[in-house]
Image (cartoon, rainbow over all chains, first blue to last red):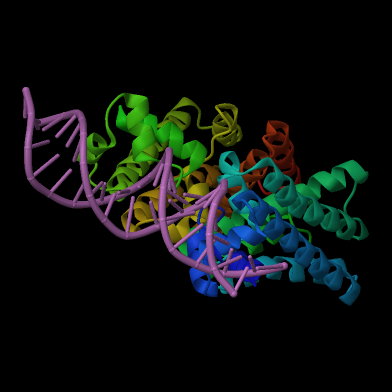
Length: 181
Length: 181
DNA sequence: ACCTGAACACCGTTCAAGT
DNA sequence: ACCTGAACACCGTTCAAGT
């Protein structure tokens, strides 16, 4: 229950926006009780980020089993980031991770980096079945570029609270060839 | 002096990472004195963001007068974002803006959005001299896509504190055609 | 096993009081 | 005109004390 409430807050307000007192109030308990389950904020952050990438990983595996057509996969993929914006203008954890980089405990950093790793690995798996030339290394580079660009699109759309901006930028990525059709 | 110290802190820790007490300590004064010059944190944030986009605008105008060759302009442009990473792993203000969106006072949001507007306008100006097809509207879309993608690259590189990651992603943008050569 | 109240050093903010 | 000390309600954290 703590993790469920904390996840929603973190995706909307970031790590610094997470407050033990606020969390406790929402659940109907005292802040000291939260500390019983998660001794420090770092512990909470680690558990949170881990659950986040576990969910994310499962979701990506679903997409892959659902359809192995690369074009469909990529469309469904960008839709995941869109969904976060739809649901209360939320963001991928990697975005906060970067913004609050200096404030994050090392243990939290590691877990949030796992999110990026999983996404890049999945994209690398999806890409080769397309007309992507080159070896495994250039494919991974391409996958990283796509992930970074989609993150940037989500970031920009969120900062304007304008989801149509996200759609437009993604279409530009397709048109320019960054995201193959 | 307050703005100079605050700018460095904000680019590294974000808006939430800005502390009146910490700021005062660095300058050698009490936190209440900072409030004399900037009554609220919102006032400080507005002044900070305004100075940021003013500097940014001047820098972009320099690039344009220096060389009107689009390829040179774009290379120099991506170098600006690289420079921030080099200098203490800092980030463009737009990144924090998005991450801390819900926490920002409206007045601050407006000033930080001006940063994005200036960058997109500049890119739109630089692009048409290339082999970019289409009308003004598609050029602006392309400019937005480039800005969002570069922001994403900066974000990802910062979250790993790995500047070579930034270089690789930018090269991928060039290779895929998102950033025309 | 789980929760609580009270304390601590932090935060932005306010304000009367100093020079 | 500029600075300060003290107060307020917030924050994460700790701990002795409760059931």
